[in-house]
Length: 108
Length: 226
Image 1 (tube, each protein chain N blue to C red):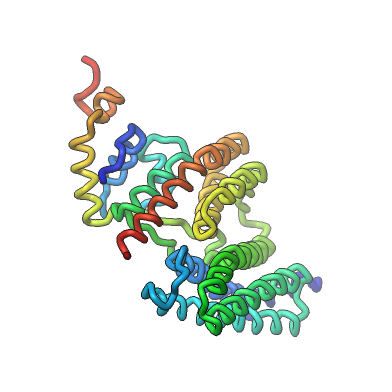
Image 2: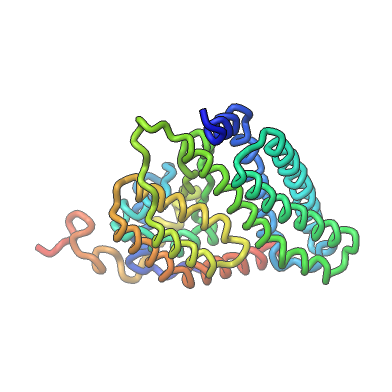
């Protein structure tokens, strides 16, 4: 079943699709999507549950690095395809929800 | 050099940080494997037996590793906080081992359900204790001349912990570590305490939605498996 494509959902997908093979952690995704930190975990969990997203712990030794491990996310190969389709067929696309967000779609 | 300084120097020199990080990985694996068993009451019939056996093996190794670390920490006369923390972790690890042993030997639905209901919370407790032990030891050895990162706002950390408590037991360890990591990054980036507090509030605000998503994903996973 296709997920509901809210504005936030579309922004997260768009941020992930900008670099589909790059791993990003939660705060980076929030910043790329232009969303407030602490708001995207339900969206990430939904896409992870659907198999569109893969996640893993950063492979560092927290004691020697002196910081906690990050949780990295990346679109799965199928997920990237699904994400493109979902954005293309969204009933209310980003260009309507937030004019000007996508170049050339803003008010004249 | 004070006894405290000697203790913290030995902690790293003798590789206690690495031992504890190994145990932390082990308990995180355990939490993830338990997630895979979530809701299984018929281990024999559901094809979940290999996973259950692996959980039991991980639990035995965890208790044994922690026991070794605890004994060594005692020999080197470490800080009371380290000894006490390890003692708490090992008590829980032994209880996990016992509950899983009972479930394996009796192999009846009820004892398996009891184990699966109690073990995830105990494992998450162990994870939390080890995480604090490692990070506290690390904080104590920060060289004074280096700029030390600002600690995350306590109020934000409290809110993040509240958000974690709303989540399904099997997911709590993962999100506790993920939220802690994000909060640490925010503090490191110099984000104000108020902004960190707002971050915590947003986590708490969306915790119920996250819980629903995680439950739906678990149901979907079970439907696919069956």
